[in-house]
Image 1 (cartoon, rainbow, N blue to C red):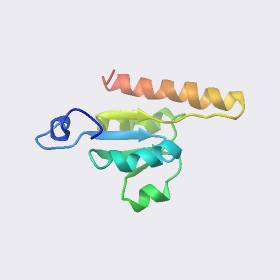
Image 2 (image 1 turned 120 degrees about the vertical axis):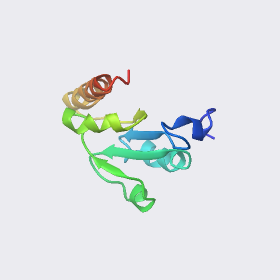
Image 3 (image 1 turned 90 degrees about the horizontal axis):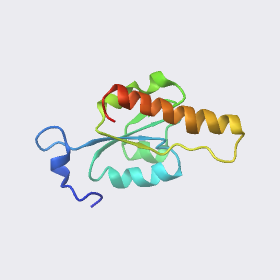
Length: 116
């Protein structure tokens, strides 16, 4: 079990599952942990591109880019947000756009929804 909290206690309604949004779910880490998370939670992922492995498992894909704040309005529909987006080995400007501006956009949207 992933969590010490029983699954049925996590959702917002009686017997419902906690809804998790994995941002950057089509990357290496995401495509490997989402199948496991989906055994216990209702999981969707937000990414610029769809992952064939997750599509074949029926995991819902939300097309979006964390650099575009409007794409993150969907955050309000989820109980837990997991951010797996990171850029490495690229130009410094891209590092800043994705790793700093992208995280800022995630936090801004989460705050707007009173999540943090």
